[in-house]
Image 1: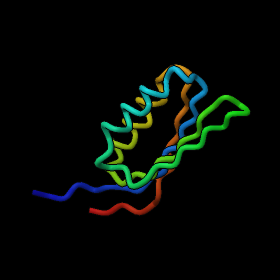
Image 2 (image 1 turned 45 degrees about the vertical axis):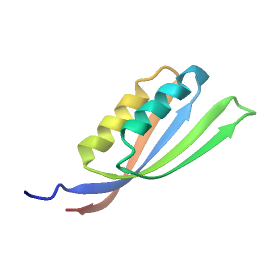
Image 3 (image 1 turned 45 degrees about the horizontal axis):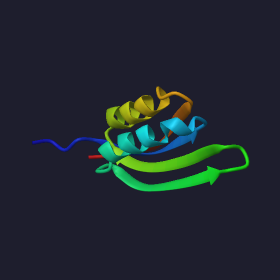
Length: 87
């Protein structure tokens, strides 16, 4: 069995619709095996939440996670990839 190539990335998430917070957390829980760390900042003055996720996963998994989150109402998501890929 060959090892799958993984990449390290950071996914930045901004939640403007508080009703989407639970859905974001449920999606992230489904990908918890890949998540290295998570930092969440509630920006109360603006009424938004800012989340940063460090992840080590195959590129298609990272893209799928960022895409699922970005499709939620009032949520934006963007992934930044490292140039390092490991098997």
